[in-house]
Image (cartoon, rainbow, N blue to C red; front, side):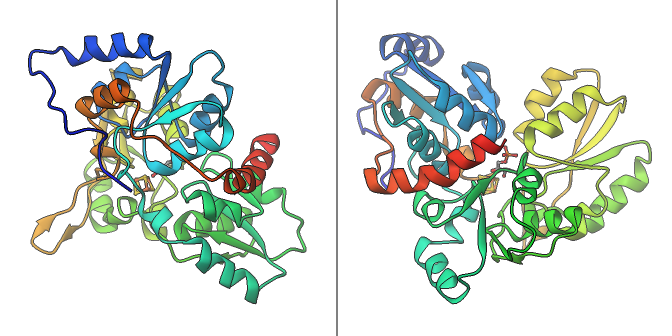
Length: 322
Ligand code: 13P
Ligand code: SF4
């Protein structure tokens, strides 16, 4: 992967918001953003969503010629797989994902060769070549439905998030083999500190993303995808909530329910430095890089057509079943 598109300096006098708006129309571009993006990026996006929403929206883009994807690489790659006619650009090609890194396609191929009877259910947080080795893709908002679609007599390998897999297996009472991947952000939440926080705020509900560790999820009053967590904050009568996911989500939660008190779930200190609940990959995207990407139509997501077609099969199966 290479870095941002150009070394040409940006004129400091430019109003980046105006320039992005101007270039968006000039390039016939649409901006998609995930809830973990910085507030400014969320606010300028045409569409905001969780992984499933963004995949569906990307597939439906018709008149725009360019999709600028503000999220991480596997999300933009999914947009390209589902809508290959469009030019898909990203602010920074280096914005990856620890889950995607944890399962390379050749590792999965080797596992499958030893366990040919298994059905491979793969979380969307993976690279295209890992998707191409999978029977079905899921996201955190449709994982239960996807697992229920797998014949009961088939053993299942869940790839690559062991925490989402373990939560799902428990919810549906269906044991699965779990790939040992984790999200570098969600594993940092501290069970000890969450217990203390709940004791100090007994009226608060704790809501969490299923990528959190089992010992954290067992204290959650509600577990769901990013969109479901936002819906819970907006729709439930609770006035005080402890939020166990990446901190970028608090921006749209505050906008959706300004009267509610939201407390970021605490993380464990790592060594001498304090960990934080920000995804370093998501946070690589900036207004400057968005401006450059629209100006230069770079960096682009490019993919071998054979690989794209193979990765599209389990993805489209998911969209048909959702
Ligand atoms: P969602 O599908 O819930 O938005 O999750 C994406 C993600 O990367 C969470 O870390
Ligand atoms: Fe990947 Fe975790 Fe970042 Fe989500 S928060 S993109 S799972 S590293």
